[in-house]
Image (cartoon, rainbow, N blue to C red; front, side, top):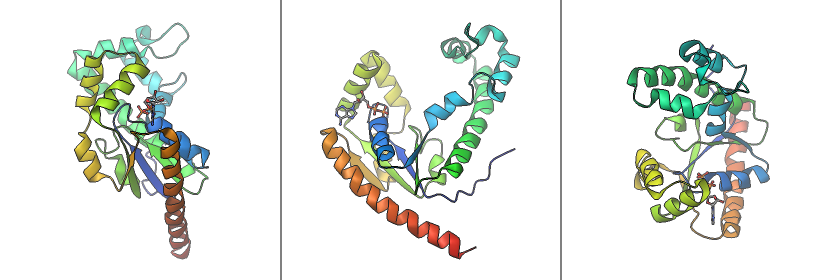
Length: 215
Ligand code: ADP
């Protein structure tokens, strides 16, 4: 069953390219009391052992895609679908609705004043349709590249190709309601996050009042 697309909670969509600082910034919002729904974490949850998602995958690709402990061997699955468009499409058709449904249900069940949806591909996957407001964490591409290489221990070439597969920095900035400069000390960023948080609380309270009055 598909989850309802009406979300009562006020939702902030938090995005930015790989290595821009989404996790660092979403931790700050969490510290301030907001519930964070992370699309990357949800993508792993829907294929955890015992889920409908993992069951469908093993039924299609056999148990060869499992690790010894019963969890999904993601590297092996990536290898299987890499050169096979049909298998890749099958997997995407399975996973995208499951991920979307879980994101929506997590957004709906959050109890904080407002909820933060973190997604690297927020705009690319049209997840911004569920958000009242969007915030882009922004750094120059050079910084993004350096931080990704250092964090993930990948080559500069690998990091560049991931960056190239995501929406261009300029396009994200054009689409965002707010932009947070993360090319500076985290302490300064945290102070701006506090200011944004106060504004978002006001927006969220207004929405709650409107929703209640409208009922
Ligand atoms: P994302 O979630 O967007 O991929 P992260 O939040 O994981 O990015 O940040 C990428 C890397 O850069 C991490 O190692 C993080 O600790 C580091 N980082 C994030 N923000 C800053 C900052 N303002 N100054 C220095 N390092 C940072």
